[in-house]
Image 1 (spheres, rainbow, N blue to C red):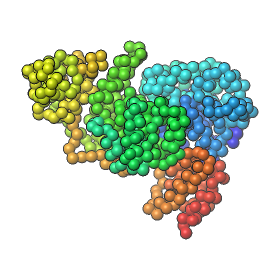
Image 2 (image 1 turned 120 degrees about the horizontal axis):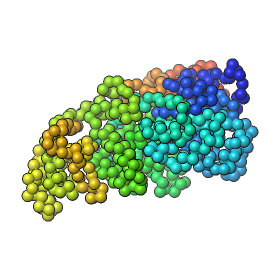
Image 3 (image 1 turned 135 degrees about the vertical axis):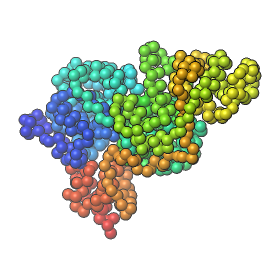
Image 4 (image 1 turned 90 degrees about the vertical axis):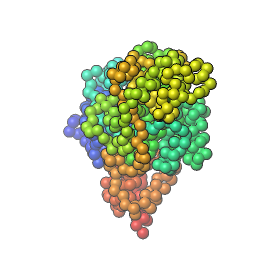
Length: 618
């Protein structure tokens, strides 16, 4: 379709009718309608909406309702490709300008833009900022500018990209064209910088709830992380697509190899791999069912795959923003999914060392340490993880129990830890604040190691005073005291644990210390169970007899996707397949009423889908 020309208000296509005819959706979600009408009327805005919440509709629909072409600034080629493929399937004239195009291909896209033959054009930020591209846009009729993943503009954000800084030129060069900045993750500091850099002062901010009720959050003590990960997948997510995040390239390779050896289809992804290998692995993950990708944080932003059933972290992320962004790649379709992380003291030490050794300014390091501390507090909380997560983003929560995180499903026991804390802090102090966790534990439980005797620590009054706890329990005490801020790991002194100013109150008995310990004999229920809080997306009520038809529809979808060289979910989402299987439409009109079936998909696939339903009835 082509973008409608400017017309009187009475002649403007109704937003809801275009939503239904093009995208096959019967209604807006949340604040979508308000945002769409605001931008369609020429307004600027900032949109914060969780992954899977429908951000793309907030700029795609106004691009169809306004005269001209919507320009979408997107940081990743993979995201552009998938978005364009989905729009083309819906009958929208969309294209991308990126480095994968030949000169002739790029010239054809430019020609179509100037001819008014495009509804949406996706452009990387570095390309948009070239004199050639800016001159091209100056000659075209532009409906709007959408800056996706807008948190990348902020140096305080978790994924700062220098090329985003130059996007301030959009407001300068095209002051009369509406701008919409969108992101799934931004704290108050990041939001302010987005507004300042993109010239959005005075524009409204639409902030949806950050809650992803279909995601089950679980953070476990890191013991044998590879074995814990294999158990998670085999027991809860066998055959599911998932993402596993690791901090180093070597760990990515080792983890992918270990999963493959265990019979789990896993592929590595990191910046050190050949670009063709990265692209091939990403394509397999997106296009095939049940593939697990093991990756550094280089992977994931803008990935549209809706049926990722779990995201696992084998290392601590840098901040709650990064954690939220990465875990948000699970369950975009609204179905129950898992966000699982294995975490230990070494993770805190490692992240703190990376901050201390970075080339950032002192102010940047202070902010980074504050963000790390907030994430560690989330990992160590005995309360509802969801409430703490939402509270970090300034969202008010009601109730103390979300019913869908490990702490709410298996509440941890709390005990008075004042004495244990005093023993540990005294041990760190009397050994000179020059040693790490393992040595302090050896002294506390009275273990005569070579190092203990070498430094004469077996002669100290603290030697053996902690025999009531085992090594695992002392590690938990240390981790929690670091999280509380009474101890810190000094990266310049080989991660020696040192007392902070607040430790004085603990040693004097003035500070209450409550420590968490795992509730005995309990385990979190399998994440395939339906969340007590419900799903984000409406789900069709399927019956046991629907399974054969669902299987036939998925097989058909896979073949169509292979023929068209697009991801399966671009052809039909799982929710649409479920809807067809549940409703068993006998006519094209009945099929058209299934969410996700727009006019073009009905035209392209309607007869084949009706035939599949009829075959299943016989």
